[in-house]
Image 1 (cartoon, rainbow, N blue to C red):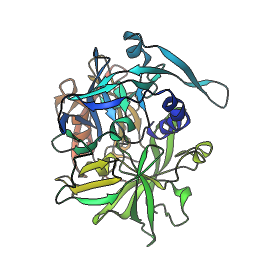
Image 2: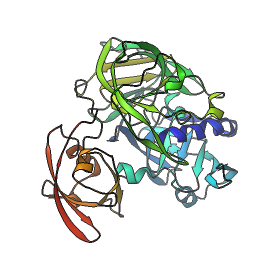
Image 3: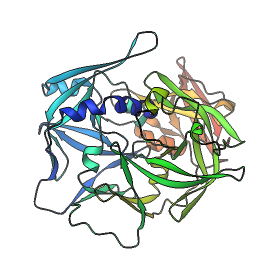
Amino acid sequence: MRIYFLAFFILFSNLVAKAQIPLGFNFMYKSKRVVIPFKVHSNLVVVPVLLDAKLPLKFVLDSGVPTTIITEKTYADILNFNYGRQLVIYGAGGETILEAYIASNVDIDLPGVKGTGHSVLVLQKDYMELKKFLGTDVHGILGYELFSKFVIKFDYINQRLVLYDPETYKKPNKYEEMPLSIEDTKPYVYSKVYFDNGGHINGKFLIDTGSSSGLIIDPDTDDRIAIPVKNLDTNLGRGLSGHIYGKIGRVQSMNMGSYKMEEVIASFPNPGSYVADSIKSTEAFRNGSIGGEILSRFHVIFDYPHGKLYFKKNSKFKKDFDFNLSGIVLKVEGKNFDRFVISEVRTGSAAYEAQLQKGDQIIKINNASTSSLKLQQIIGLLNAKPGKKVKLEVVRNQKLIRLDLILSRQI
């Protein structure tokens, strides 16, 4: 979903920007620093917001989007938003892929922060289905407008944001510094990636807090990019018009400044799927993106006003990079997010060998009822370590099936 959704915002960000009232975010009190708690779901940062001082919601904080999005029109209708313009995207066959509206003069508050007079993009319905794949309520996305106003520290370990006043902010001690280029509202850095054929690139990468993946590389952008010999053809995510496919494998290493990470999992989308050809001419060139799986291994500070990225490793830095050791993709159903259904089984994976099937509902894992667990806890158990045995009970066509899953690496 993540990749195609970016293309949509590239198309319409100028329309929204023209409608914006230049008020924006400010500290509520005369402070130089505000701390905001957040939750991490699949490497995405979810923060509490309050719309028009009335409706409490949860938004993903995403450095890759230019404007605020409400993911379902129902929430905006509760507040009687006035819509200034309707936007429609059509598919190749003339069918409607996405319908959205622009609402103006919206207040968006965070703890200790007042946001006044924003224009937001309101989706007709929940095209993204983030709830199903994150296992928690998510109602929108917050992007550039917040990043551009403050210096923002992401503390993934303690799950808190720290917002600083850019005018008084000073470079932190013991943090490494990289130039951060802001182009068309998006942040870019240069990073070296080494491939298993001995080649490498010093690539330009979008720093994307709204991507749960670690490293995405567009193989069309440089002849020196070598897709790993050992790779999987797999589903990399979901787009507006369907699933995005490509290859996934391990690059030899990549650098974030002086920090070197080895055997990094990287996704290589099929040609044309990462950024559609019609979009490339309007978006800043990039070789790919660096997302939450890598960023969450650091304390990261975004300083848009001064064009700097500060970072230092945290306790997760040495964690192995692995890709879905079970081969299962889960989605959450039910009002209370308590039904865990397999939406995909990867060919050749541990789940495939155990004969799990799409549509199976997992009701127990290691003898614990899934009704008492969160999605992230279940995903953690299904990705514990290679060779780990996981006991499952699933319901298939109203029949109870018990089986063992031996977690394994395919790459």
